[in-house]
Amino acid sequence: MPGKNHGMLVKNTLYLSIGILIIAAMIFTLQVALGYVQVKSTPPGWEIIRPPAEVSTLLIDDDIVWTGGKEGIVLISRTNRSRISLPAGAPPTSYVRQIFQDRNGSIWIAHDGGLIRFEEGSWQVISPAPEIPFRRVVSLAQHRDGSIIAGTDADAFVETSSGWQSLRSRGMPPVALAEVILVTRYGEIWVGCGEPMRGALLRFDGDAWHQYTMKDGLPHPSVRALAEDSDGVVWVATGYSRSGGAARFFNGSWTNLTVMDGLAGESTRSVSFDQDGRVWIGSEYDGIVIWSGRPEAVITEKDGLAGNEVKAMVQEPDGTFWFGTENGLSRVDRAVVI
Image (cartoon, rainbow, N blue to C red):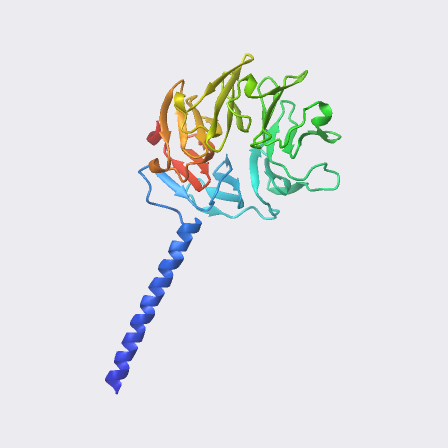
C-alpha cells in the first residue's frame, strides 16, 4: 500500500506540474496576443514595446516617452523601456488624440473626454468645465503669441485672456472635425479634417481663410497630418483606405507624391522630419518611407516596426527613433536606419 500511495502521489504531482505549465503557457500566449509583453524577437537595433497596444501620438520629455491612444496615456522610460506610473492625481482619459508640449514646457492632452494640462507636477482639467464651450478635443497647436489652439468637433478654439474663442466666429469655414492643426513660422493657421466623406483643408493667412480641395491639388480630401519643414514647406498627409497621397504647399503651389514617386502606400497617415532634414511619411497599411527628394527606404513590420500603420514618429537628441503604430511602440537605433 505505501508503494501504491507513493506512486499515486508522484503521478498526481506530475499531472499538477503539467497543468501549471499549460496554464502558464496559455497566460503568456494571451499576454503576447493582447500586447502586454515586451517583444524581443526583432532585428538587431530594434525593440517593440507593449503596452501601449496602440499609439496615436508621441512626445519625449526628458527621460519619459509620453504615448497616447485608445488606452489613454501610457508612459515609458527612455532608458529601460519599462512602463512608468502616471504622476499622482492624473485624471481619467479616454481615447487620447494628441499630446502636445507648449513653449513653457507644459504638457497638454487632447482626448475624447476633454482637455488636460500637466504643469510643474500638477494636473488641471481644462475641459469639461461649465465655462468651456467645448468638450471633446482632437488636436492642439500653439500660436506665435503663445496662445493654445484646440481642435474640436466642427470648430477650433483659441485661448485668450477672456476665455476660449471660436475660430468659426472669426470667419473659419465650417469643418466636420478639426482633426489636425498647424501654426507655421509665419503665423498661418492650417486646419485639416480627416473625415473620409467630409474631409477639408483650411488655411488662414492672417487676413482671410482659404479652402483647398482636390481641384486645387490635394491628392485626397481626407487630411490626416500637417507639418512644416525647415524651408517653410507645408507637408500634408492625406488618404483613406487604399487611396490618397502626400502633398507639399510652397509659395502658393501644390506638388503631390504617390506610390509612383516612392511612397510606402497611397493612404498616408503621418509626416515627420529627422535631424538630417529627411521627411518620414507614414502610411495607413504599408509602413513608412524615408524621403530626401527621392525615396531612400521603406520600413515595415518585416524590418522591425510594431505595425504597418505609422501614426507618429519622434527622434531623441542622440538620434534614436520612436514610432507609434496601431500595434504598439517601436524603438530603433539611429545607425540602423541611416
